[in-house]
Image 1 (cartoon, rainbow, N blue to C red):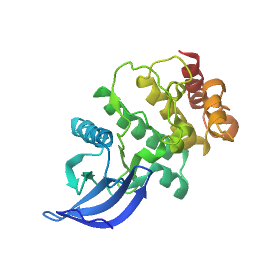
Image 2 (image 1 turned 135 degrees about the vertical axis):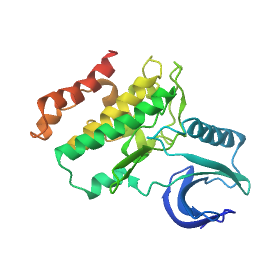
Image 3 (image 1 turned 60 degrees about the horizontal axis):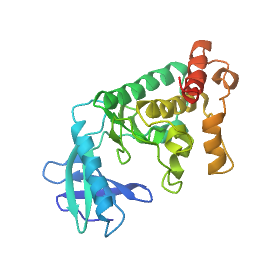
Image 4 (image 1 turned 135 degrees about the horizontal axis):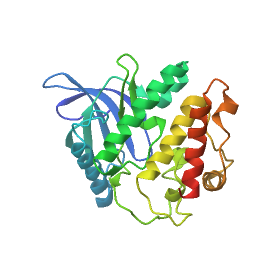
Length: 256
């Protein structure tokens, strides 16, 4: 467990290749916090710049009700830590494994997920990593907030670049075709909407629209395949909703 001056660390809640997330409290006022710390004890200048940029984006989004607030950027030895609010929830990815929801409950959750992303776009930010793990859900208050702006950029039409599959391995299931660098299309807000479509498809059907035995097959499926209509997976899903989820992904791939 780490030591960060001014904070009491209670538990480690998540670890990725680049960072670790802790839950704790701010000593001065006993405020519950979540702390994101870079794993590398001696991060590169690029890693520090990107981490600082992530904090700045979160700070610029402060006041958007659907976004987790960033409280401070703290120095930790030779590295940095982002201290942010703790809404007392878990990721929607975890929630989907632990709760059986009715259609109405799924629809309410889908609206909240979408509203939080809309607030990010309203501030001219592309999230670029929309997936169920990056939405925190407090099931008691039904509050939903988006997190993890490590890949986020300002909403500009940027050139597609090749993606490091090792870095994005955990989110390839939700990646947009243009983020793979395999098609000649700029990355803009539609990137997030594509990933949102996959997130909602999974929410309502309990499965992903595209699968693959390896990374390249999965990327190909994102680019070329048409998803199975949700109503064929769950007959209780209304036709209107099924058509919108199925064809929103298909239209995206068609360039509409």
